[in-house]
Length: 150
Length: 77
Image (tube, rainbow over the protein chains, first blue to last red):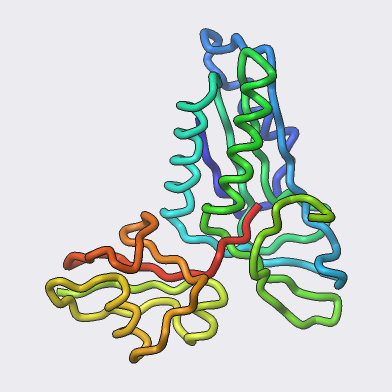
């Protein structure tokens, strides 16, 4: 399992392919791969957003993400998991986060992937600062529960 | 004998600093660190704290050389 904080823009599909290719052949017994890719929107709370800066807590962020993967590994039958998160400046259509989980079965893969993503959203020390279309900046104050109408 | 205190995101911006060192006093808690660092300002309800990069309660005792961090709710992903 691995956590990666990425200063540069990354291609999530390439990242999955590269990581999977490096898995030891003895562990390649997965029948299910569940993937979440989070992409930056060009709007938030009804306002145009032209870019964002993602701040984090070097050291604690990696440690917290590692803990989340350990919990997922204990709770579900997973073979491997990989998290990549962008930091620094990011623009619309660029990938913010990738979560990939490999398992023998889809239930464990889906559930662990969802768990990792939700735990990241609520506990991993990252903070978004938006640069609005007007040029003004604002900090995102909290994450939502992930549903449009909730 | 000192504690390194760090402030992130909007909190650090509001305070006008990202870190500072405080003198360690035996028996200090995370809350004591906040009060000392902010000259007694009340701690916002939603502020999170960590000691040595692990989430901590306000009542957690700190030790000489610890790193204490305060930050707003996280918004990654």
